[in-house]
Length: 162
View 1 (tube, rainbow, N blue to C red):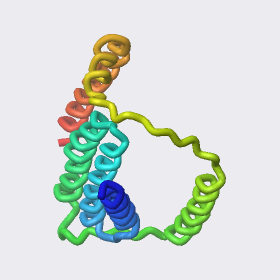
View 2: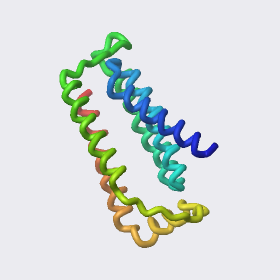
View 3: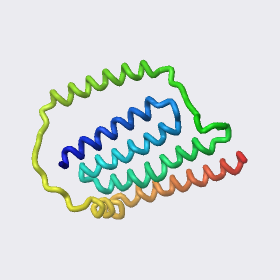
């Protein structure tokens, strides 16, 4: 049952990622991106990475994807919801993607994978939080200051533009 659910989530992720790339309507691509990111969060849960799955849900789905949808909906030059785009390099990208798929498949099938059984970890959130607040506190604070500076700069740029 768990393996069937894994393959269902993987198929949903791949199908929605293909819809992101192949759809000409930007809004539909953004909605397909939402399902792709949900699928990736589900795959993180299968990898026992519950903290990364939570970050995936909060940051990418809750922040970035909503920002993309709002950007599409609130752009001044859009007169219709049916905003579309065309990609003239779709054929070249398809050929390159096909060859990359063949290359990756060959690497997967020819690699002698080491397989072992392991116990499921109880939780990764506590360990990540402890590392962020002890060993990696300086990089964590430096990134927070960088993001604060970017936020202040974006606010200043948006005030000058209007």
